[in-house]
Length: 283
Image (cartoon, rainbow, N blue to C red):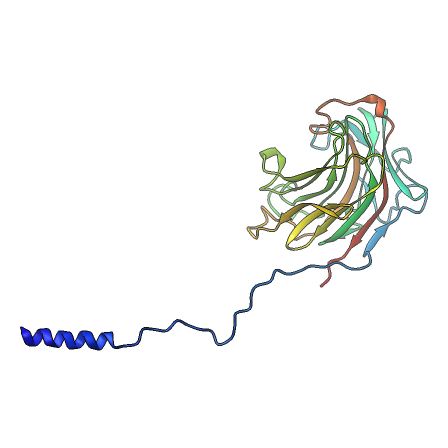
C-alpha cells in the first residue's frame, strides 16, 4: 500500500512538472477589419438640366399613363406628352396637377419615368426642386426596380426607394423611405425618417440619395436624414442589387395624400424641378 502511494506521488509530481500550454501568439499583428468606403464620380454620368423648352426629353423620359388609382386610390389621371401637365420653360420642368375632367377622373397630372432609358445600379441621385403646398397633393421623387427578379410580385418584393415624399395636409414634413418584402407600410414595418423643412414650397432645395452595396442614405441640402443599411440577410430585406429607374410625379388624394381630403382651391398645383443629376459609384 505504501509503495503504491509513493508511486502515485511520483506520477503526480511528474505531471505537475510539465509546462502549461502557451497561448497561441500570431507571428504578425492582426489587421483590423475596416468598412469599405464608397465614393462617387466627380462628374455626373447622366444629367437632365431641362434646358430645352417644351415636353421632357423623350430620350430620357417616358410617361406612366392612366387613372386607375395606382394602387393607392389616387384621384388623378396621368396624361402622356401633354404640355398642360408636364412642360419645360426657363430651365425648369413643371409637373402640374389641374382640376379638370379627364377620363373618369376629376384631376389630371403627370408621372414621368426613366425606365428603359436611364436605369442605374448604385450611385448618387441629386434633384433640385421646389415642392408644392396644398392639402390633397402628394409629390414624390423616387425609384423603382427596372426588372422583376425577386419574389412573386413586382412590388414590394423588388424594392422602392423614396428619395423624397411630401403630403400636403402635413406641410413641411419631408419623408424618406425604402420598401421591400420585409419592410413596407402595409404590414407596419416600413423604414422611414422625417424632418421639417418650413420653406419647402418657397425655395428650391437639393434632395439627394446615395446608394451603395452597403447602404442607402438620403439628404436635404447636404445634411443626412435617413440611413438604411444592408443587413446581408437576403433579398427580402435588401433587393437593392439590381437596376432601378427614377420617377417624378404629382399625385392627388389617395390612401395617404388624401387622408384629410382635397382642397380644390390649390389648383393648378405645380411641382418644379430644376435638374436631375446622377453620379456613378467609383470602382
